Image 1 (cartoon, one colour):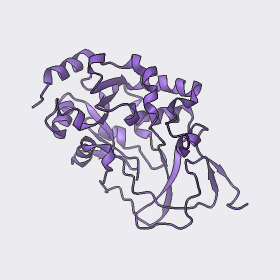
Image 2 (cartoon, helix red, strand yellow; image 1 turned 30 degrees about the vertical axis):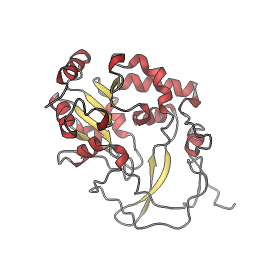
Image 3 (tube, one colour; image 1 turned 90 degrees about the horizontal axis):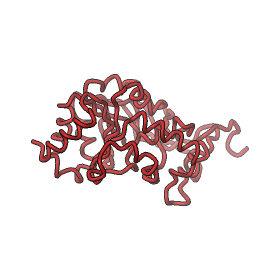
Length: 277
């Protein structure tokens, strides 16, 4: 049962969302006036033939590691500790998710038909007809591969339910396309081998982008308090151009934020001098 089905059906009819790819970011507490429970929300969109894609990140899997070469501009204030923590083992079968992702993302992740990306920290989860095709190429190093795939679809949208652009992970992808290199962190695989992975940076300043993409929002202003919909490709293309012209637009309010400091310089790069040289 949908509490406000007529409103949702009107939105879908006017924007032609049926059968589309939806990059979903949500706060269920903000949409309880429309949906009975998280599964009710998920089933509504699946019933329209949509494919749902959501971040299913988990922030407790990285390990402390000091590589043999310098990695500069890597979003940290000091070098990683020299010892390794081997008590966090990542396996693809792990279905833990950080609470920050929200209850809807957790319900998507835990469904038996869900496809989950191969990434220790920044995995995506997906349900629907195109889920496997979108998710299967994600890897620890190619963190935004699902978005590369979504760029090939004509009917793909960013769907924000009760959240602002600070929760819109595709903005990290726009940063990457514009030339900003994702940060490098480390994880331990099931063979106890320490491996590198790329991860996203700070998103606390992303809502500053709202004014430059507002013309792309497919929803009327009266609905903007709880639902905003942007065409995926147009949204990415617009932000890529903005980021190349205005580097500071994504900077958060913390003047000491190491991630904003370094990503605005282009992100990490290697120095082949050993530490102390």
